[in-house]
Length: 169
Image (cartoon, rainbow, N blue to C red; front, side, top):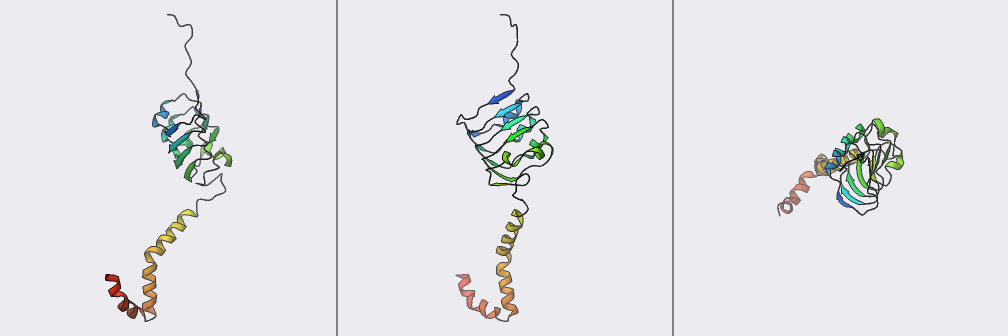
């Protein structure tokens, strides 16, 4: 058998709207010639594989309308040809990576992920950590502060003496 022409490798994969589920396999990073990948409108769950950063020819990535969770891998900012990104309507969390091509994407690329924050979204990431820390401080130090105030008022001894049997029970 003679081959007059060899098939060129596939450079685009569109599996959108097929009700595919499970996690996106790490082996996706082996498809190094891929230019466009569309896995939208499925039921993929779990994290976006960091191995996607190996798709150095990728120009378009659509992972929208799945059940993806966790952070967007920082490694994806190394995809220098990436012109189109859509991770909207998932369950992604944390700060949107910054740098290179990621600085060119609009809010619509990330919308529908209520726990994502940072540019280009209007939701700031700075408020999340201090609230958590202040709540932890209240839980850790709250009872101690109350006892210190009671002792300072001179009534702490009476309060502790009255409740010591209850505390040991």
